[in-house]
Amino acid sequence: MKKVFFSLFLFISVIAIGQNSSIEKPPKRTWKILIKNNNNKDVNFKLAGQIIIDNDFSIEKKDSDYLTLETSPKVTDGKTSTYYLKLISKDSLIVLTGMAKSRINVQFANVEEEYTKIQNSGMKGSIAKDQFDSMFNFAKLFNSEIEFITE
Image (cartoon, rainbow, N blue to C red; front, side, top):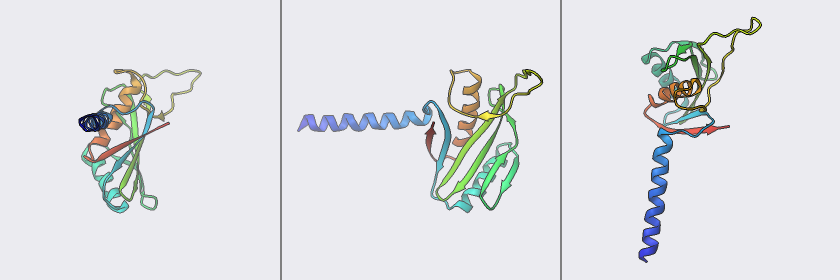
């Protein structure tokens, strides 16, 4: 009986530790962050807009029919890139994705770098990590449960 109790305790502890660290350490290749709450889609749409405005972003595109918002480009937290965020409001959920490009202006054959999907990749201090960390820090502003979607 003690072995069963100890095994159960150990199992629950491992799960609790794993869940806690996943919030602070999102899985590699995460490209979409789900911000979960108990609001309906209209309240989430207004909430997303308010978080954008309250945190020095501006709204570039707004679609009230599909409840989507897109921010204007902004410099990442580590100042390596320019990025913008896309938010889709649903019942009990806000879906967050982003696009970014390096601030290092390299032109090849007169072709300027385009925005690419933000994804959790690269090492600490890398451009890709700075881009994802900026998007993740924005998601944390909602003070809600977060889930990660990977490729």
